[in-house]
Image (tube, rainbow, N blue to C red; front, side, top):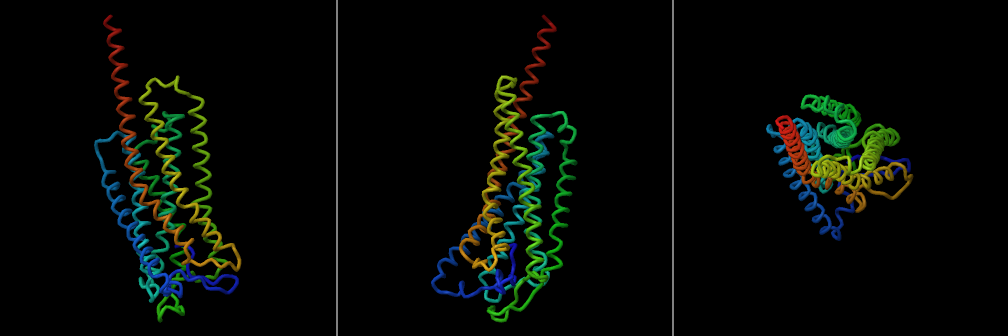
Length: 335
């Protein structure tokens, strides 16, 4: 939902919010019904899954490490739930002949939510990745910052920076009358195509390209660490497997994020930089990339629930190992 109604350099109007001739064509009725059904399924699964994850994140019996992890998972699930929630507005608007029906306030707020939730998701994933790296290579350092309060401060900073990044939407988006919507209105970027292109390009670098590069570098260093350490240095095989399992799940979450959002951003950049192209916001390719981005928020809850479980296995193995070491010391003392 980033590239809104816009007049491009070639004089064409790309309408994302109104129902054009494509959608009124009887030949596409079944396609439209299937698409709406798909968006509703994404909404139901995404909202239910993320709501369950948010509920499970509040577990007071967990250790400090697990509770810190759950703080990040909570904010990821909250961002995913908000992102899925906006799919309802997209579905209603794209298949409504009256165009944008959510008013002036909704025109400024709803697009901003997309930017904020994308920003929060990728940067919490980045912090999670960095936390995993430090926990492996320098656990003494990470233990100083592994607390519920510190994790909350980090997440609050990420949310506020996302709000700052999305603030241009609250200023630039306006309602305008557009032909072909039966007298309806469309929610449009009001400062021209070049302004819109520069802003969305900046968003692309801030919420996708730069953090993606940082996470790739982090996991490259994690792989180097595992190669250097090797299994012979691990005092507990169970703990080693659990640590690797935690890292594997984090990598899986990040990989799913890239798989779902890379096509979305490629399509957005093609819309902005393929001059005089025939790309339309309502064509099949654009809708598929949009559904993929929403699908990410449906898959994540199933991955998030695996993280605390792996952490608990790791925590239990460490506790059992400490008890065994303590018992050994006592036996040697009485011998």
